[in-house]
Length: 557
RNA sequence: UGGCCUAUGGUGUAACUGGCAACACAUCUGGUUUUGGUCCAGAAGAGUCUAGGUUCGAAACCUAGUAGGCCAACCA
Image 1 (tube, rainbow, N blue to C red):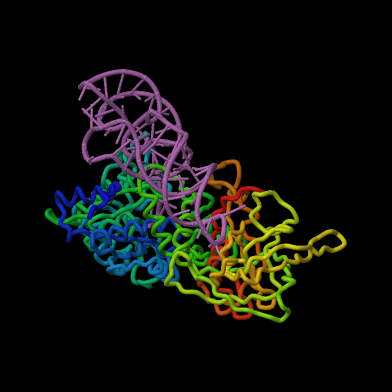
Image 2 (cartoon, rainbow, N blue to C red):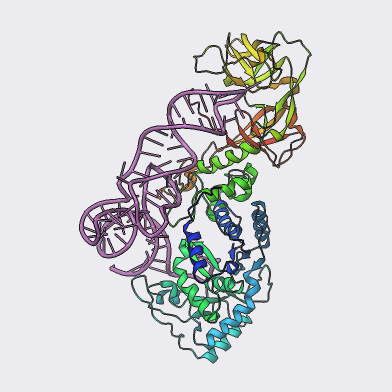
């Protein structure tokens, strides 16, 4: 038994290193900390997979923690959608936590900081504070309130908490270093007054902690060992450590913040503002429009949780700027769906074929393999009759040898059925082909084992029997943007790069087997692509979303 | 006029921590195939941002430069 030694990414290396020095395996604990202020997208999916993936790998608990410190933006609907997205991806959190659960503890600690001279109430406007902040190259200057007495700070802070002061009158600041080269350390705000109801604590609090004050402390309270976040928080690490040091005792296991580069996907946008714009301007229909990079959009498009997880895993994790080609994501779904999706036939652009030597009124039910990649998937029956549809592009009156499809005088196999030969065409007065008349070889039935059935013919076409066909709506989705990075051009708006053909609604004739297909059922329309039943679908009106086309190596035409 | 992070084929990650650059996607060939899918075999493509230095030996370490990113919200 040889086990392939897989190289570790830098995050895993950090953990392995910590395991060798000051952490036991049982100390490991992670968390996914979304702010419930919007819907999750593919970028969050990477982060979810990273944290929960580490949990699985190291058999460590992973908390789902809502970073709900800003009642102005956060809502319960987002909490619910985030939970369902994480579950859909297939992960289980150890505990469902909320930063708001720690408001009292945070407040008590803040009082301690004030007593220790590590925090003070500032009573200036935010403009004044900003002007004293200095610049990256110039040190800041101290607030006139920096030397307030502990007693006064305590009294003021309590007044703030009780909502006895104006919202903009005071803030609580950490007293650190106004000359620090790291501007984050120049007396950051810990609390602001917000006389606004919170989605969980209601009107209990009139002050709310800032991210920096809440995050590391929440990690510490939950005894999270490693707190992974994106690179933009790197300068915050110093502050994270400063705060944690003040609330922990020596000997306590304190959490470590480590940063990784956010992973960007080509041909899409991911910022909440831009996504909202797409919805508001009706460029897409909703937040879960199948073109959206939201988890709910990907789900509706037909992406499987497994494909998203393997995607996240396969792209790795690093610290440099990146732009991952969406083709890689598409590869991941194809790879997964190839193993799972039931093969069916559907014709998008119909051309009528009449099999002149097939008895009128006769029908046969032929058996079709559900999935050649998986024998246990079984088979289903497809009706065959005298008249059927094939794809327009699968017939030409004449064509060269590279055209492995139907042409006059030549044979082709109808998938799972018979070999047919094109004999004649019927055209209208404009020369448009209306029908192709063929003959079939009655001995060539697929699976019959006859010599004729085993004959090698150039090509195999998908088809559907006209009297049995069901008309369905197909929504053919493509990339939402025509360029890799729609935000790269500073002269132009990202909306200028919207792909006008990102959605094409069409009609398809599908085999009757699909009649009872339910929302989210996934199929491969043979030779065309993977499709997923949309939630708009009904018994009378089937709707299929094209998840992704099949790979196509035939780049002629 | 600062601090910090980063730099490896087209893309994304590797290189057992100093021993002549690997994997996946994408691209191209050929084979198999009742899906021009899958699968199989193969090809091409970087000498690791630049210049110095340390070393028998550098993608890795050091110095300087260049390029990109982040940092001055009562956002997270």
